Figure 1 (tube, helix red, strand yellow):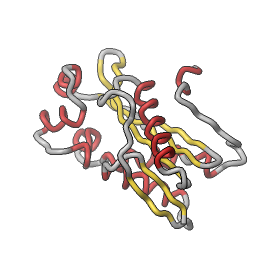
Figure 2 (cartoon, one colour):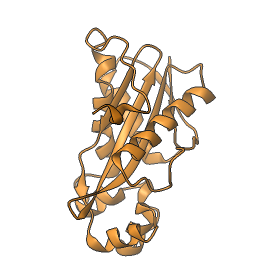
Figure 3 (tube, rainbow, N blue to C red):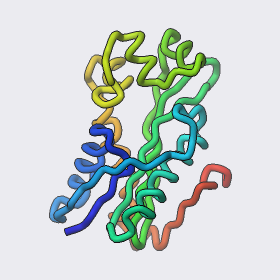
Figure 4 (cartoon, rainbow, N blue to C red):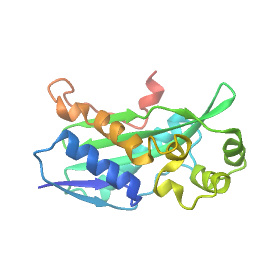
Length: 188
């Protein structure tokens, strides 16, 4: 049985990781465990680089805490100002003993009311809860679920990205010893 450590106890991140892994490897038995791991970045990352760094730090932190596992997954949501509006996205970093994979979600625009609260220092989940009168939305549908009227919830949003991050694991012959690091985005 393969051990997968998810660097979060947020049920959305844990369940998205489970479903993504099971879709990619349907004949493999997994034991999943969510653990709290600090991201090492601000509570609300405000750039793609900072968000990637948070996902990377979480995956590495999980690996350090549970080195006996087979996979370690870090997921970090973030925001970036693009052409006068705020966009939401997340990075997924998956570490394995022989491979590493990285993927980024699609992005979408935040409404002005939510953006204003985020600029005032609120985390996105708290801002969503205030504007949309929700409670703990980041542990359920998230911004994406609220804004798409439930067509895409936060878990579904992350599942596809977990699958994309697993591409190097599905095709190890094409991604021999892929090694991503904290400076991945600085190499552009």
